[in-house]
Length: 111
Image (tube, rainbow, N blue to C red; front, side, top):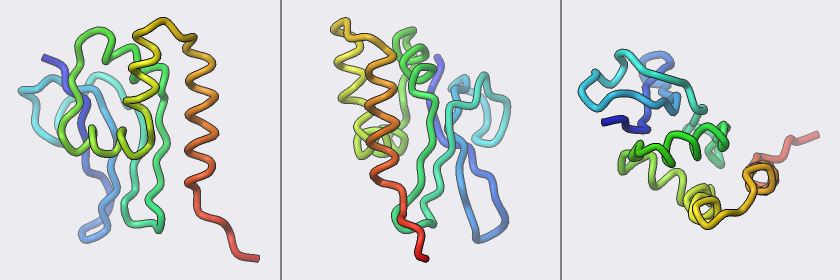
């Protein structure tokens, strides 16, 4: 069974994560099928970059997100857009909408 889960990267005490599609039996930082995005919880607010079209592809074909990834996707609105994708809405529209939503969450740079 394929799971969409977090793969830890970064130095000791400074974690950041890749969102990957991997077989359930593989180790946390072991073999994976595809990198779907990056998540950094250390920023304020946390940063998230994803390939939504590939996430939709994997979920459409039966991949299940882990609990932690599911929470991240809910906060970013990806699961809501996936439900609309299943009902027949165009992928391009949903991906553009997702890019706008993530851009709004991005931290503002001080001048």
